[in-house]
Image (tube, rainbow over all chains, first blue to last red; front, side):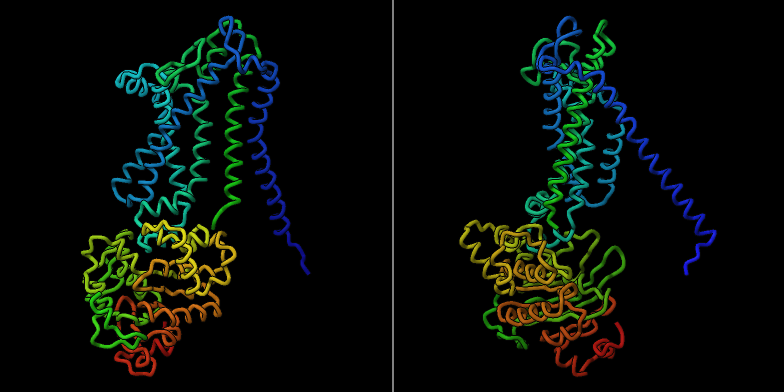
Length: 289
Length: 267
């Protein structure tokens, strides 16, 4: 009944060829990840210990732990989030819920895209000029975190706007028709349903901020500090800068130490990412429409 | 408001009562081209006012104009005058109050992503009601009147958006009723609803018209025939004619296009 023609057979061969090609490409993608993780674990795992995580650097940073850097990174990321999340979410709410499509919002959108494209070293220099010098914060957690916040703002805005957009327009219209104001509609219907998306975006943002080095190295992160920061006006060590320092700036560092630092850094990022994925899966299961 | 006391219950409208909604020479535009032009008609208290017509006739735009939804719709402009209870709605200080007096039911049921209870309690809450007992009472009453109570009374805390289409549509009616509206506007409510539920909702509407005024946009001419006291025929952005439903359906039309549409010759 169904005699395969020469053309059929050729199509079938081409089909399997392309399928294999795409599969190989996909596998190639995983390769760098595996290599990086493998190298880090092989060379760095021996450095990880209780003392490494919770101790202070010793002997000109060639021994001891990374505790101040770990705490410093948490400080920097937290303060940056405290600034960028409220600002970014508010801006996204305005853009998506209040502003219409006009020249004003087009300019703002353009600004956001451009802000996202600014290289991190330029952000760093801006941070020095604006926060360290002009506002007089000095090199401090505050200046560094504000620099990080400005850098991450576009991503917070864009991811929040996407999650707001994902809430069907019909919900808003139903609410408006009941006599609700825009804000009542946002608070009661739009935001509760956008929160999962916003949270996911924020966590991904955290993982990116964790690794940033350039924006903080001139604005608040220190080469070596034998104590923990006490307020946002202190300088601090940070994991990312510490990795740079022990890899390139300090002589006679044992081989496994930089790898250990990198492993902790990437561990933090992966932890954040898996949290974000788990959260997204949990909230997707609770999807309400 | 003045006329409310003298209005005749049960429909068929006396000519003497002041109209609930008076529309004069209303033109609605999106950008340049009018979606509806030069419409003048009255909606009387306690009547079911049907609007029939094919797609793109301007029916939905008309409802939006009555509710001042042009405020939320980019590019929508309404010219002419619309009076609600004798007050011009384009000069209201508080359009939110106007909208809360008008309940709207959409073609596709919109169960808000809240629990069934919250769906119905939302409008009173927006109006500032906090008392739990009062809210409970409103929720129960509205769900009963929308003929949904028996099906959902044991799961008021499950999500409204997960009900079946027909149930969601009755939920939206309950939600509209929870606003304690003067006017209920239904825009092709039966599009996504099975025939049995449609009949149940129609029975609900027949009950409701004793308490409020109903504007029923429908693409089913028989539905207008079953429910409407008076009917308007919209065609391509024009209000062709308004008449008693019985007149229109018994051939006493002023414009032959109305008769053709009702007999199913086009549209």
